[in-house]
Image (tube, rainbow, N blue to C red; front, side, top):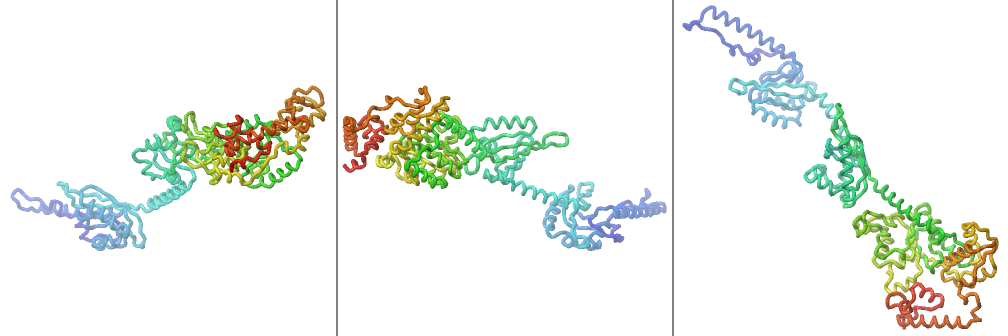
Length: 638
């Protein structure tokens, strides 16, 4: 197998091809040897020796190493190339420790096992091994063993040829190193990378994909693959994705699809899958490369955008309610100062005030002056949504969560992520929704209706109510812990009757606004009208004032704004001192309300509350209690 310039000795000649293996002489029919027979024998032997020498020279000229072995594997001959490469003599090659001296220590055990297995048979075999040259360096050789068989099929010699494959091995090692580096690079990619066969069956997947799924490559390729794929794709996407994938693979062109993929945490996330075919020289598809990019954040942003668009439409419809804060009274000045202090923070604000005082306007002012001003402001009127749907409206729902839930929907909290959510009439929330809201305030996370994945949001909460939440807590209608979470920074919006100094400014503002809207030119405001506005108690507050002015502008024919006194109760325009009946009526009303509160121990709402006993809406009764100056809490001790 290996190489040397030494020439073989006579024994080598005998070992390679002995003249004794050919007929030595011929005999006459009588069995005597004739002179002619002797001459033929000598001539044949001379020719045979010449052929052996010529054969030996040819073998020595072959660039491969050649070793001849006995059936048991011991060396009996080595050509010049083998002896020159190893720097050994033929006797050293024939020695028992030849292989230990020549072959690499890491290959000896493997080589011994492979040779023993191969030599025990009678068919060609091969192996690869490192052999040390006379310079002390190892090179890789491919050794091929071919048997010489007798007529009975028994091995009488083995011929081992060695081909230097060092350069090939170096190239293979370089390729393996590059492959390892490429594999590491692909594994480090944030995208999922997959290799599929021409039919779309998985062959390889990078570490990012395996980590997301929580499987090994063998598990992903193993039994039950189709069932797992069906389970791993969101049910809402399955049919669409299967159709798109099948069509894409059949066309043989690059294509892409979006789908929700199940992770090892049991949650689905949106991914954009891009498929690209790999072609051979004939133009046939042999592989598909697929990459999957996580687009969950983009999808959520799209859903939020859709919800914000809906909210914007609602804002446009209700734009008449979103006026500027108008007023110069001391009460308004104090409230403006509170807004300025709390707006730059992320503190939760509870805005309290009667109906129509502009609580939503205050909430918008806080948002517009905060660091979240360029993000969404989502408004939810908790009293306008049926109790059975309020949780879905706030927190969203998954497809099939309830009858009519035909697709997944993001709630208002997700739409407000990064911005502000305003919960108007928060006192009307059902108990179970109050619990979910408390969790959002404490942990900034929630679950969609019908879902089991916690969703984290960064939302500032502003809430408003015209209810007495302390009373609602005492009645069991509102959670005390939620009240404390909401009431971090309370702001009380004064009723219009407590800031009559602002009425002239408000009248002027609204008259100008609605006159422009109606295309009318109003130059002045009637003094009696202004006095009428200032003397009226405005139970509907600014909203009522706004509506009255809009109506008056519509019916106004001249350049002076005025209101018909008949639009208001007679007791408003005339001094109470001249009408004791009105005062007596108010006293009787106060007495009736006091009696009802005494019977219900201060409870207002509910079937057994004072409002039910008096046949009044709860909000109306609360307004009258406030207007008449009744202390409802003193009845709780009765």
